[in-house]
Image 1 (spheres, rainbow, N blue to C red):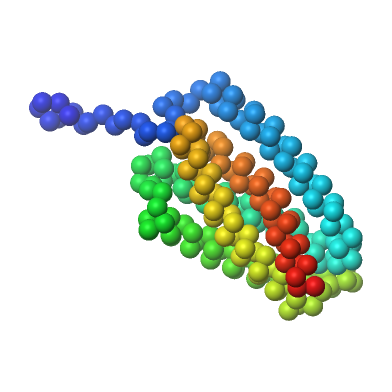
Image 2 (cartoon, one colour):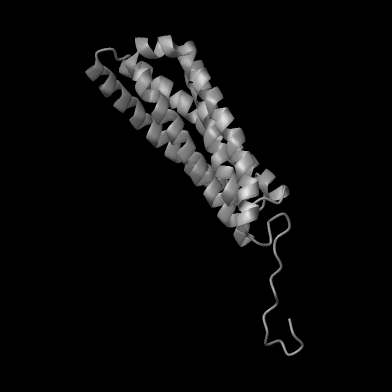
Length: 200
């Protein structure tokens, strides 16, 4: 602040965040990241193919897969966007006791609990229409248990992604959502069929 006190104090950029955004900087960051994530998506397709027999036996599970991983990606995007915004505003503290982080976690878990219950009913109805549905109770157990496990995983991956992006000097708005959605594609399939293996 100036001696007269009339001019506002100049804000300094936060440590760990980029001071400026350029086309070259964004491209050089995202191209290697997207190439790596594309390879990861191929792995996801291979993992999904290994469960082909179960998917064909139970049409309800076939309905569940894209919605499950899509919902996980959406929840991760919400979490990353909220954390990134707070980080840019300078209001985010990476601590489990931070009420902002706890509020975000609670919101994501609450959304997951609501969405995955509805998903269980929807997959049961569509499965019945296709002539090969599992029981409603079984489907609700599968969707709720796998959905909540996936939601907890999404929270962890989102928080770690934002933190590492910040520490490495990358803009979390560029890096975290692609990472979280791709990681959740693979882990969503593994969690879903892990629960299916236990329940069935």
